[in-house]
Amino acid sequence: MAGLEECEANLVVYLHPSKANCASDAILSELSSLLFTYNETFGGVVLAYDPTIRSNLAKIVPETFPCFGVQLKAKLLLFNPKPDMVLEGEVVKITPNSIHVVVLGFSSGVIADDDIRDEFKHKVKGGEEVYVSRTHRKHKIKVGAILRFSVKSFDEEVLHISGSLLAPHTGAARWLDKNTDKWSRADSTATKRKTDRLLIEGEASIKNDEQIEKPKKKRRQHS
Image 1 (spheres, rainbow, N blue to C red):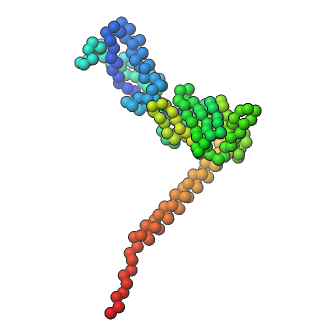
Image 2 (cartoon, rainbow, N blue to C red):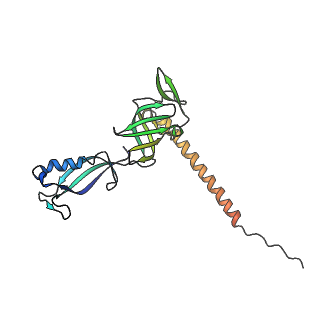
Image 3 (tube, rainbow, N blue to C red):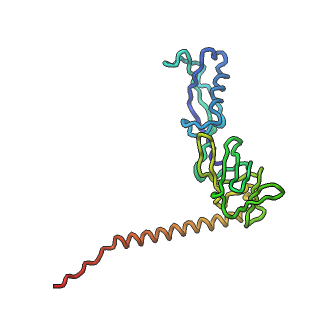
């Protein structure tokens, strides 16, 4: 899934001498404290780690006495969603004005009403709130379904994602996978319209610039 990446990091873990006999457990405990928090040094939320201690020797580092530093190399799995990335999450709540999801079991996300395309209409069926496509009735978004959406923003402090369902390739993942031909045509049409609009705006801008830069003719002076 987009937003996931692996990296290798060279780390130094500082331990108290009382942990010398169980250094491995102490190191794992320190690394565990990094999990599911955003780390600016690594540039993402740490989801998993695989450490390798580089040496059996440890040394006391100045200004950290009496602690000693253990050098190690760790493979890290990071989560760092960027705008326009496509993510998937489980729908946990639906309201007339929003769809709420959980991504990877820990990060909450919401798609607000303004970011849900007009194709989807909110309905209540059998006491259950759902969003149903006006174009394809079998395309439904309900609690428990896997939702595919694009990222608008990511709050690194609270690990909250703001998402969007404006693009044709977003919606219920199961329906999208089974009906690639239907939404891909809509996606191509939307892309063409956007390109045409940009071209028209570009031509209009060029014409306006030419009109502004066009020198004025000097009037003839009559003697």
